[in-house]
View: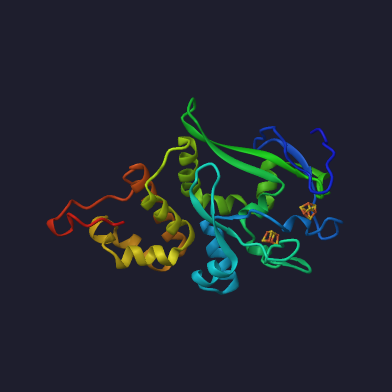
Length: 269
Ligand code: SF4
Ligand code: SF4
């Protein structure tokens, strides 16, 4: 691949679509002179799975984690709200998890950190009638890892970073965002946006919503699922994604009960 000379804070997205089989060279280790330079002043989105994994690693409650380390963020294309890591209020705006030796949450570092220097997108191929992934390279002037080290495919790199096992459980969430992006500047009701944010950011709030509101009077949820989502946050998230697809896109993945007179006028949101 052609080398593009960059310096300092220069940043470009290489306008070449990469596939899982595309090859590139990249090497990063604590010995590189630019070590840690890429961990400052970032717009670092967190997936719902990132949130529960980092929260558990830090032994915090969801509220404690969200309050201390995150801030709301509107995704530019879909206009859907998620959370991102809040950079420290210092000169370099460093990531709160950057320590002397590098990343202090390395085992549970966010998906976006694992992808770097690759960028990732999902889009709907209408001709083929399916979703397709798209990758590209992000080149920054300070990063000396690109174009050095051994050549590997995009897929090899993704596996080396543990990406597939973090993406698979949230593929419905990624699809919700991708669909909204493909709609263009269509407004969605504010309440739907709030529901998306609740499921995307706070499993405790969503669990309370399921078990402590009229939710179970309106939606059919079998006993096995109920038992699972009571105690397992990932299962709860995955149930939440299906429910969002039901209420946002009418997919009927979580069935509504037949309307009974007692709940006829009750809305879940
Ligand atoms: S979470 Fe870790 S890898 Fe990601 S920006 Fe922060 S310090 Fe760097
Ligand atoms: S090589 Fe790039 S990714 Fe690795 S530490 Fe340096 S700037 Fe960060």
